Length: 248
Ligand code: NAP
Picture (tube, protein in one colour):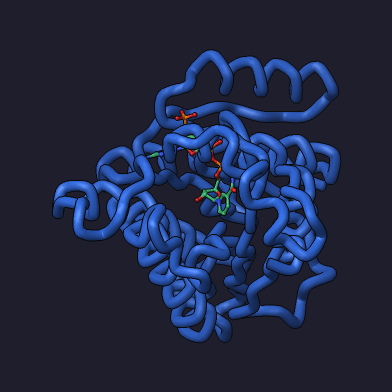
């Protein structure tokens, strides 16, 4: 396969697991990260050692100029795009809404919403038949928080992921006739660093009893759904959401 996949936030967690699975599926990869250069370089080396083609590009997706540079690197390395996985995301320490300030909301919306929008825009400019492209797929990484609201933890993050859901629905309908499918996954409690960023590394252990399947999920379990939505096996899916949350 000569298909090219760009994954944002691929240095660790769900993004890195998606990169490993995509490499097994034969994709050539452009792996974005924000700050963890050593982890991104180690992943590129690991994938290269197994015969895959991967390049890492540092870029903060909240910054329009950096997103433009990221996609310019994509053009330079591969000259094509088939799949964008809009995975980069973040949250801030758990607190109630009345403790939050506007700056926090702006940071959370900047990464999770504006960053996703910017990457979608650049992907559409390359994939859409309106712009001479041959089509492709976008998979947005939302969250079950969009539906559950994350009370007492991070309503700002939940609201941002709600916006990602609306972005997915709207863009799917806007570009469906131009060869682009746009879908999303909504992970639940997945074992990554993100919970420590929220101030509670043991969050999954605390909440696992509320999950019908009685456990947290792995990044690899999310990656399977992302790869399926990206693939031709999902050719009749657009504007669709897969909840990967153990029934929660
Ligand atoms: P993670 O382990 O904290 O990894 C986050 C990734 O995003 C890292 O690669 C990070 O880069 C990158 N990133 C963050 N801000 C960025 C920015 N401004 N520009 C570019 N890259 C940026 O998180 P994760 O759990 O794998 O999360 C991946 C996605 O799944 C996120 O969208 C998250 O909201 C979503 N999600 C996760 C869970 C869960 O339980 N883990 C549940 C629902 C949804 P650096 O390493 O360079 O900092």
